[in-house]
Image 1 (cartoon, rainbow, N blue to C red):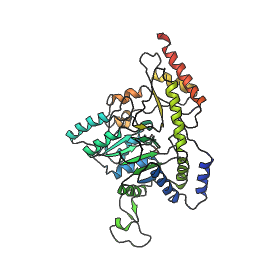
Image 2 (image 1 turned 180 degrees about the horizontal axis):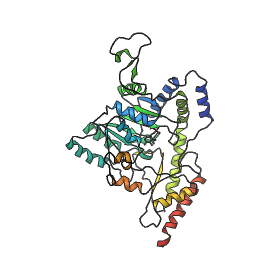
Image 3 (image 1 turned 135 degrees about the horizontal axis):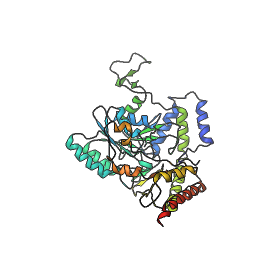
Image 4 (image 1 turned 45 degrees about the vertical axis):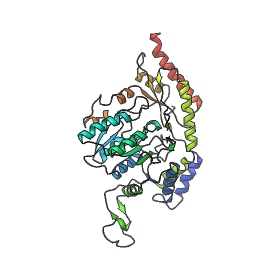
Length: 392
Ligand SMILES: *Cc1c(COP(=O)(O)O)cnc(C)c1O
């Protein structure tokens, strides 16, 4: 089976983890801070706070943004569940903004229209989770302008976008987002097994994120409501969590970061080949945005099902039957039973739903060979040719 994505680990990664295993610190040690500093430096951000996964990172980012009961969080329906669930963890209401039919990202024009209506109704969002779908940022310039006008916090869910750039700067630099979240799950760009990170340029947010990561505890006398009892003393000043990452994971992350440029280059090369090899097929290929240099976590094609006698599902199952681990990203979040119970219905976000009816994520990962890619392309070509047969 050719998977749709997988990690690339080498001996240096293994050695880095083993070195930590032989050290004094398995967690809360110095490697975590080294990883945070390295990620912040790579992305030109002020501060990094590493946590156990990106879902936890989104949760504490929402809390640090002040999101709570009665507030609204908006995000894209074309994302992983966590981009929306983080609002529900905080007791907030969640709503969605439909996607752009070409980039498959949250549509900034649809956002502007929805904000105008929400302003009239007094239901403006406190937080927008702008998902960099497949590794390509949304129209962050427009989103930043809207956030200034309407006063919401921008959290970029860049789980797909480690190493991506937007408008000439690294994703995470904080020019267009208050906080940026990365995931280090094995299918993502670089891995720590499980892991996530929040980047921000605002020191008060970074401090708050650190406190929320570890039970809402502080050892800083300035944050306490009475004088310290002694060197052992700490206070819990709010409700936090244990969302810590381990030093073994941070060591793996640091070692992976050394290879980021190579990973990105291989992904770009595979994308260039797919774009050429698939150009004559009845598929809608990803649109390359001038402003955004994607990290290419995913390579998604849309099957142009009109005029074909094969369905999206038949093409998908045909690829799977050939040992090709295709996937679909994503089932629109508002169609999940949990969100339907909150009042969402089919038809609410038609672009996301039309996209879902056609989308297939083709395999792509740094260790994928040209031969494996040719195999994927050949099978896709054959399945689509079968579908065109009866019409000819
Ligand atoms: C993977 C992913 C997450 C969650 O990441 P974890 O590290 O698995 O918690 C959140 N948002 C998006 C868009 C993702 O792809």
